[in-house]
Image (cartoon, rainbow, N blue to C red; front, top):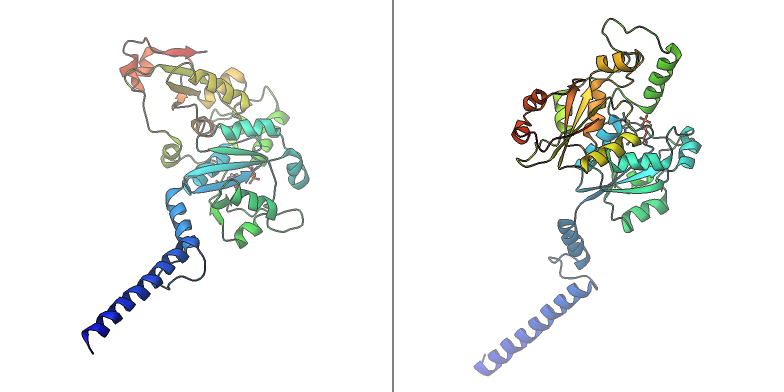
Length: 337
Ligand code: CTP
């Protein structure tokens, strides 16, 4: 082979190689036609990039009627499965059609869900079952990656699974339901308490009716999971508020919001069951000290709680709680009664 034809072949090979490479790059950018087998399609690349660079958004829905720490624990676990938690609060009509009328109306349930510190966004009037339309809305408008529910079956009146479509789409995840509490259980405690009524003696343990039938077993791990784990800074303006916070409701949330607005750190004292029984009657509280503490701790306005706060507050109490640093001067403390 002479040198002229060899260099012509080299040039031709370069030109053809260049064209093939150029065409592959263009095809890759336009996402048109199958690219070289070793190159993933552009859409897959785009998706991978988006997934890597945008937060994972998860969705949990529910009635959240008479919101309790079991609901809060469900939201906490759901949030841990992603970076952002969007919560759908089911409409009053949908609840009525599927389980009977709710005790608390939508606007109160919305307020309670919004106040939970693991919630990033709330959708009102969510449907009870995940329909095709709603699921597409979640995926396309709200950029939801996964739909989450507790591990208890959620059946519609016709016996079908409310999350069947999400499961079929491979976009369903489950969290562990919290044992020992439910809205029905709380209503039962209330009925029991009212049927026995005022004037009933406190039992030997010194607890009221509601707390006697609580099946909740507090563990230090659960308390830690609900805690912020942060104390006040040296110059923090600490606000203290105490109370029973029994059957934690929208009124409690509102006063905690206002209290937090008065300073930088909100400490909430939760009275003991005995204190509440002796001041409000033997039929109270409905929720025991640890149950009430978890509901308060889950609230986004609360920084710390005293589990079993004394009825009378003293300077010593705050020093014991290691808030002495900021309260050494006792200047920044605001006490709301
Ligand atoms: N949930 C939970 N633990 C509980 C109660 C509820 O993990 N003790 C979860 C449910 O599995 C669901 C979410 O909280 O994912 C919202 O529950 P909701 O729709 O309000 O209704 P229920 O499951 O019926 O709860 P409850 O019986 O307390 O009304």
